Image (cartoon, rainbow, N blue to C red):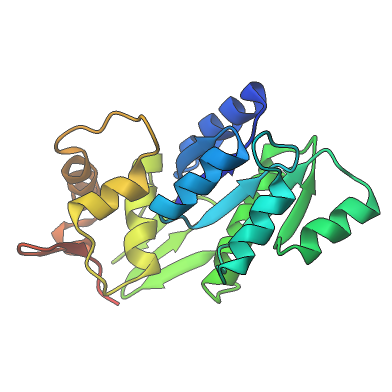
Length: 218
């Protein structure tokens, strides 16, 4: 899953990037509204974390502009603006959720999971595909009688493949899921993570589609 964090406070932005990366997400961090808008025109995201008090273009204006394009991308506002009027404005402008600073990372992560489940029309925290079951909270994968905790990158690979089970992901598409801006990507990084998953669960956990990429059975 690839998230866009739009936050002008360096300390908060760095903390969010570090925490969510450790949770298995690929994170891009825009520091103002104009940079964020450019990113949204060139990159596909699964969710936006949006501050309101941004330079260049404020958060509400960016959100209204996004919804004017008929985008249904989930947006979670995270702001220190805690008045009823601000909350009503944010939600009426198209936000899916509203979180007031300061907040705990645990609550933020839970709200992100909730919005992503909602977008996938699922109330369960467990992704299932064929014989595989992936707990999105504990990051534990069960397959054919085996179960193990996954690393952040292993989890990112499996959650991407299982969310759209039956679809083929190229190596480049999986790299976009795994890595944010300015992260160094090894030439065989995806293959290494897939090898580790197969080592834990057997070669059938992820199928090779010759010349196209990888998939898990629906």
